[in-house]
Length: 180
Image (cartoon, rainbow, N blue to C red):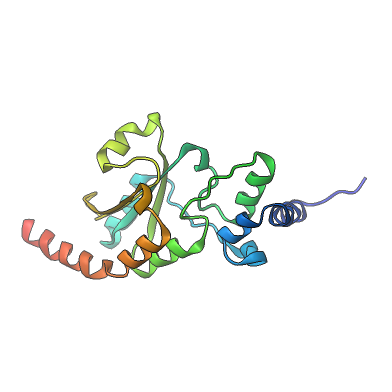
């Protein structure tokens, strides 16, 4: 009997996923390059993301994903490939490519939280005016600054909009200072 350690098994499964399903590979880059698609590095919870953002006076983002993709969205190539091989998860999200997370971080949005858009999170979804496949960018006070929902929650739309986010956030900060 041949014994394989976990990294060998995961690498093998990722390679199989790439061979069997080219679109999954394309989700994290071009061809075999998807093997390097890193995990997003989600905050443990929305309150944790907000607290970290408040401490640094930064904005934070919440991604409300479909319940079916909550376990894999933004968790990196190995998790995505393993899911696609084991249970045929065909749902790709904006965080299954590093582009959106990279653009958010370039714009100064360092804290990212992920929430399954399901009945148990209904109050949180209502609080942020979100549904499945919605990205909400918030001030450290929890005020909703930007939202991308449904068809607008796409890499191109998000990337082009967040390029202007530093100016939007600076204007919000000035407005907030006047209110307190």
